[in-house]
Structures are given as C-alpha cells and as structure tokens.
Length: 275
Ligand SMILES: [Zn+2]
Image (cartoon, rainbow, N blue to C red; front, side, top):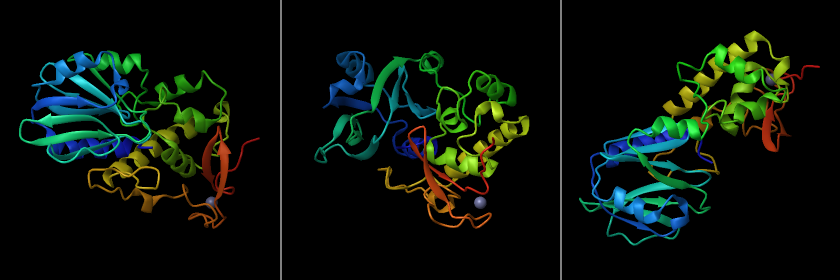
C-alpha cells in the first residue's frame, strides 16, 4: 500500500510531467471509482488545465482552473503518463487524454481507489469531512494536539498512530520505525506514555517521514510506483522487514508479532513492554 512518502513521490513526479497540460477528453472504464455523477465528472474535467498538484495525507489534489480532482490510491492505485495513442492496458480505469498527445492513466488492480471532483475552494471542507488528521510536518501537530487526541483513548499506541484521523500518513512501515526509535513496544497502552514519549514520537515521526520522502519512499513488494521512480528508504529500515536479523542497537534478533491485526516488527530488548 502506498504510504505518505510514496504518495508524495507520485505527486512530485506527476507535477514535473503533467502540470500545465490541458485535458481533451476523459474515458472512464470503471465508473464506480468516481464519487458522484460520472457525466458531471467528465464535463467538469474536459478542457481544464492542470495548475498544480497538492497532497494532504495520502490524498492527491489535482487543481484546475474551476475545481479540483481528489484522488486516493488506496491499496494498488498507480498513475502512468504515456502517449494517448498507446494501447489501453488491463486495469486502466480512468484515462485522461491531453491536448498535446500525452495521457494520464489511472491503473488499479484492486479497484479500491477513488476519484472525485470538488469545488475550487473545497479542499479544507474535504479534509474536514474525511477527518484527515494532521501530518507530522504540520505546524499544528504539536504536543498539545497529540496529547488531546491520545487522552481520549486507552488503546495500544501502534493502532492509534495508524489512525489517519489522528496522524495522517504514518502507515504500517513507518509506525514500526517510529516506535523502534522511541524504544516503545507497539502494545504500550497510550495512558502509560510519559510526556517525553509523546515528544519523542513527534520528532521521530518527522525524522522518519522526512527521510523517507527524501529517498522517494519505500519500494517493497507491496507497492511499486509506476512512474519510473523507485524509493530507496527500504535500505534504511531499522526494524521493519528485519525479522530474525540482529537489532542494530543491541544485537537481539528482531521479532515479528501481530498488533491490531497488522504484522509488526519489534526488538524485544529495546522495546520492552511496560507493566
Ligand atoms: Zn534492540
């Protein structure tokens, strides 16, 4: 599944490739992925020029003169930019043909991705309606914000950090890395955290995601970007995917456990449980 750094890599790559291109036509091969009326979607988008591409959490926002297309890649969504005359591959569900002969193709084997046309000034409302939490880089992502969110639950820290309404963009890989850096066991209950733990979670989240974005994300078997860009963060992983290998910090073998149904990597020595 693409996580925030991978989506950011897609955004940056698309920005270079398609900003200022004008859409000549739109073909929908799987209309169900469009939220709202398909005809309206096609009518809105046709003849519009892409002004910019923004991202909030794992949502992409394609800004046009008269509105915005919001795209969420979910599990397997990918974009391809190629000549409009190329044959249409299997699993391409939306095809935007540009006036210059190029095309943007949305490809999704699992069909979980979504696309929606929203008004030009609708981004804030969209973020609110979909309860997208703050990103670790957001200036409002402070001790006060996180403490307030955490005070409402007694859950384990890992599922809480995976909750996109609390922190946007920390997925399974990155939460494992953050908790390892903080020396916190993923099953630690939120009310057992100290003030310093929360501070540490904030700084580690920023550091891990920042580094991952810098390296273009993580290319592992679950998601490979389509735009010819491979992430390199997989070479930097401290704990995730390292089952049976020695911890870089203490040499104990990394274990893989399940936490809240998710495969979780942990160093049993550096990340002890609190009783
Ligand atoms: Zn260790």
